[in-house]
Image (cartoon, rainbow, N blue to C red; front, side):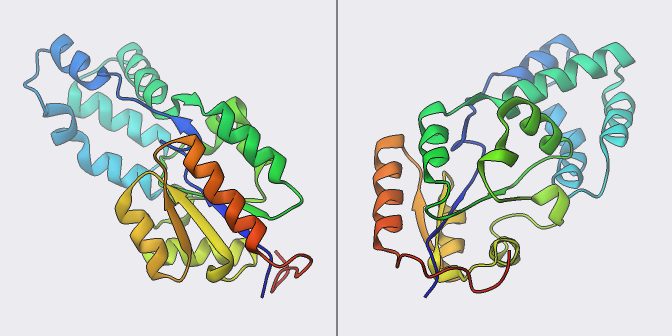
Length: 212
């Protein structure tokens, strides 16, 4: 057996990310029918989530597809990142910080190109956990089982020693299918209780299966 490991999602878990209505406001401003932004940009959003394009190309595609000038592109992206980054879930982050040294800690996030730099600067997630696996760097998104396998490999742990926390049910189910324990995030109290039970039940001093 190996020591306990806790793996967090970011958006909706470590970050609180309510919808801000920014897309609808841009469609109104540009006099576009509802749904036009995602219709025109959907393949770009997908490419950015698995890292097949960079931020510069995202900006170029915005300009071409929505007919935005440079200042509008900057403003559009600022609104995107405001919703994407949300606000920190201070209580859960503080609890996770207190776990360091008692269990393995990781992050697995469906992300967008540019997320690591911004989340590092704002929230310091790179100092909170041992490994962060972003979909735009890995090239694979949850619920693909390979995303969970890659995260375990990066942390040097076996799936059965891990508790995965996510706010999306299909991702929780996918994690369980790979052999992990998993918890659907709904609130901090129940999530913290579930993590505490997982860490407490793990054998002490068992170490990792591989160096990670």
